Image (cartoon, rainbow, N blue to C red):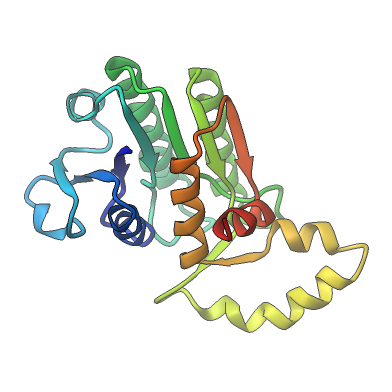
Amino acid sequence: MNVFVAGATGYLGRALCDRLVSRGHRVTALCRPGSARRVPPGTTPAPGDALDAAALASALASDMTLVHLVGVSRPAPWKETQFRAVDLASVKASLEAAGRAGVRRMVYVSVAHPAPVMGAYIRVRCECEQLIRSSGLAATILRPWYVLGPGHRWPAALIPIYRLLEWLPSTREAAARLGLVTRAQMTAALAWAVEHPAAEVRILDVPGIRRAAQC
């Protein structure tokens, strides 16, 4: 398949590009001008700004699946201004570019919700989801809570607590929805979403991500 990855040099992007290339897909990796050397091996660099719809449209083709991984690194409750300037603005630019280029399929990483914390982040990601729903694109929206991996391992200490909460009937649903996934599970689920396009808008919550990763 022909895949365009926005956010290809990030925490999930590099691992996803490696997986897609290993599975025989053609991958175009969006990168900042002058940063082509940072794109994963086997991908085609596409220098451009994730907030520039015109630049994105020029790099897209109608047969591509657009994978959107752009966002503020290490989200925190006090970063709402950044979320709106980067996360929300980049989705708006991607959707405008997709419309210009005739792209019909999208894969987007959102966040699990509702949740008792990270309200600003969740609000912005929900706005992004609504924009995608309104765009008419066939889209898979993945909703992880925390993705364990290199440099992102501290919540692993909470796994015994999660197991207890999943066992208790009163907290089972929330513990599953706000569960932890690994970067390997996320990249496997993202690749599955690319290879199995949604007919309309499909949501993969944490249990869905884990199931897709096993396919």
